[in-house]
Length: 405
Image 1 (tube, rainbow, N blue to C red):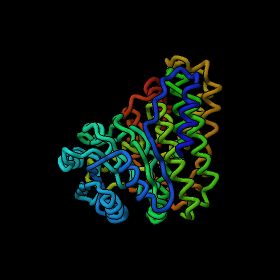
Image 2 (image 1 turned 180 degrees about the vertical axis):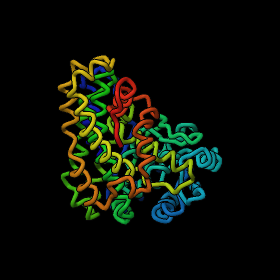
Image 3 (image 1 turned 45 degrees about the horizontal axis):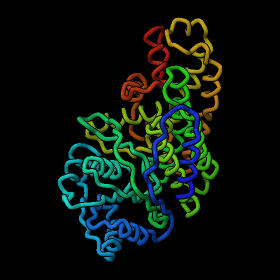
Image 4 (image 1 turned 135 degrees about the vertical axis):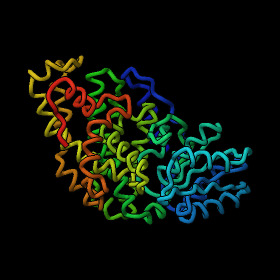
């Protein structure tokens, strides 16, 4: 993967998209078996003296303990921050967890190690940025694409907001640990990758209509990562070593694409806004959390249906479009329609998710019709990003109703 990073940076330096491409600060990515001794050797090479492992009870038992032993064998002191779950036994990246981690990290700490999936990485990423201490990523499940990114989706006063924090300086993914993760987490990782179908379309739409920053190179990297998962869905569904390696590499590459671009546009469109809206509703009602990738997998199917059955037909009605005051819309209609027609049919997306054991409909996640309807009309307000979902809501205010749940 180090060669991949070097190639990516070379391509970014020659890219003529006009955007500032960010340097990738990740020095080492190791994917294989028994990689924790490599991590200890890397930490020793970096002359770290005091590490803090941020984990939960499950991830500490699965990987944190053996990692701690490997570090201490090299003479590195190890402290622990085992994040306390909430009343639903969920670990949440909210103010309570962030403060717990900050309080439990000794002042002499010179490296933070995130051992777990997305939420624990978000907590570690926040602490790393605020304390100006580097962090190392240790995924324990191939469940999200944010391991290598800078973005940390945090719950602040009940609202989920993504903050740009710190990327890891290294990542060590042990395939034996990833293979042993629950099947639902593998399905969630696949769902997070499948979401790129709608996020890439929304990203291009925002660029064409509102001039939002766009990079064809980053789009290609993200698309290739997505296609590697779709082409190997059977291997991923089997959770064998090859399939898990394909999935974790795709998730890492998606994160690297966001890191180079400096924002989450390539991997987060309207489907993520729906997911965040559902998550905040669950938190407000103190309901147990649903895996992020499970939600975005379902929201991708839902949004594909909305875009194909309602958004594309709207673009085919010149009279209605003339009443909607959106700059750069008319001259880009053909390209916009092409972009959204390329999203696979909802039934095909459902079939892909089902192969991995993932849910395909909101009700399977405990999301009722009222919450779906509310999210379709309000979720676009969560982020200042111009997606087709936001356009449809703007258009609905200026003409007859458009979005039907």
